[in-house]
Amino acid sequence: MTVVLTPYWSNGVQKLRVEPQPPAPPPRGTLPAAHDNKVHAIRCMAQLRSKDKSIEKYIYLSQLKHADEHMFYKLCLEHMEEFTPIIYTPTVGDACIQHSHIFRRPEGLYISIKDKGSIGQILRGWPKLNEARISVVTDGSRILGLGDLGVNGMPISIGKLSLYVAGAGIRPSSTIPICLDLGTNNEKFLQDPMYLGLRRKRVPDAEMEEFMEEFMREMCKTFPKLLVQFEDFSTDHAFHYLDHFRHRYPVFNDDIQGTGAVVLSGFLNAAKLSSAASGRPLNSHRILFLGAGSAGVGVAMQLQSFFKIQGLSEEEARNRIYLVDSQGLIFDSRGPMAEHKKYFSRRDYKGPPMTNLTDIIEYVKPTALLGLSTIKGSFNKEVIEIMSALNPRPIIFPLSNPVRLSECEFHEAVEWSAGQVLFASGSPFPEMEFGGKTLHPGQGNNMYIFPGLGLGSILCRASTITDTMVEASSLGLADSLTDDERASDLLYPRLERIREISAFIATRVIRKAQEEGVDTLKDLRKLSDPDLLKFVAGKMWKP
Ligand SMILES: NC(=O)C1=CN([C@@H]2O[C@H](COP(=O)(O)OP(=O)(O)OC[C@H]3O[C@@H](n4cnc5c(N)ncnc54)[C@H](O)[C@@H]3O)[C@@H](O)[C@H]2O)C=CC1
Ligand SMILES: CC(=O)C(=O)O
Ligand SMILES: [Mg+2]
Image (cartoon, rainbow, N blue to C red; front, side, top):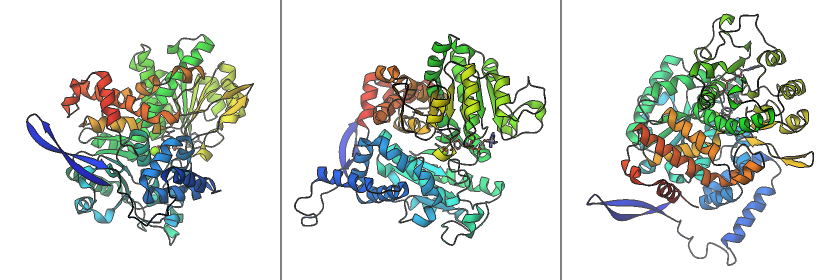
């Protein structure tokens, strides 16, 4: 992208503003006479739709992004619902699995354990040093629900950043996809001659810790205005590195905090509908989680806010939440457990281990069942029928990704609950007709949160990302439903409004950062709410 430098005055000092410019037209004679951008957009969509396999569509769109970034993002914004399942979940999962086979050209940075000691040198080689604002960093150790994919995790960083550009108008040149190569324990990849990463097992924790210290220190030194999003680290490392760095650098973990925020938002809307049908007060909900990893526990932590908003104490809020992992209900006398499970471990249950999900549902009598377990089919007919017998409108969120790992499908939840389910899934499902009505599945995916949370944090130059900023993003999303969307019982707004939603979320995040005093660009404090919204919308890059 070309830029021009425009002079402006600030506090009596003349400064230069970098203004990105549209790309220069191609030299005369290189395009045929009848070439026209409007027709070319139609041609691109026809080429995309002519491909049968979704992975072919993914490859076509990544080529288009390289060849004509403006066309790619223009079409992405105009066809959000068609593009996101290709550039993001579920197809990005296949792109990760096949990354070493479909790799065409470099995009982003691969930083390996062999670079320890010289990470800064690599970062300083990045071509757009001064423009860098947001980086999505994965170590490939838990990509969606697909396990350890090593450097094949790179497409997840690329896909999330494409959504930052499309959804929040971050300039493409301000994004840095990063995949850390700390080895992989994926035997199949280690045996694959095409595998692009280091051919070694994952490094021990102590070595990873030294690497991560150097990496974050150098990132902050090289890119002083950069926000870092940790993505798809295995659960132990996800919690550890969030705690370790969050008070030192502007960083957040998308799987723990972004997912927590998106689910709290959908739950706020679902709980109102569920309580309206049952006549039971909002503070009487009980939530059962299948899955207690980074996503399950991250969401459970955030959902405590739901109960606190209803006036419950922290202890009372915690008591409304039950976690189940691969060994069944999590309770204290079950024996030793991972650190991140302890907070929600039940103190009140003293019986024998309870492993069967239907038994656990009969015991807990939840109003909501949330899946972050990667176990396809675990919300079966019996489970959904019991949930429907307990609740006139059961809340059922199968949130695992990609779509083939979803705990149940939308049509199953609808049919087995006689159309009463309040549903949100991690990956998209098509809407369906039932009982003479069109029913819309919600997509409870962090893609609704991170673009706005990131944009707000970047614009006010937040020094850290606080819990209240994350919560503000969630409440902002819940409040962004239109009357029309509420009338259709939608739990999340329509994806085509993503820019409007991200701008709204960003203003809420900025205000919270200001309240907490972590905004370093204090000028934005002077703006009224409507002016702040205008400022945020005006900052968005437009293809
Ligand atoms: N919708 C969204 O926005 C997001 C969805 N996710 C999805 O959540 C899923 C889990 O992610 P993580 O928590 O990071 O992974 P993880 O592997 O750390 O957690 C999985 C959890 O499921 C439990 N589990 C496994 N088998 C089970 C069984 N048979 N019965 C009950 N529990 C079982 C495990 O014990 C563990 O607690 C993934 O599919 C991921 O794609 C993650 C982040 C965001
Ligand atoms: C959506 C997401 O971040 C995940 O499945 O890991
Ligand atoms: Mg993730």
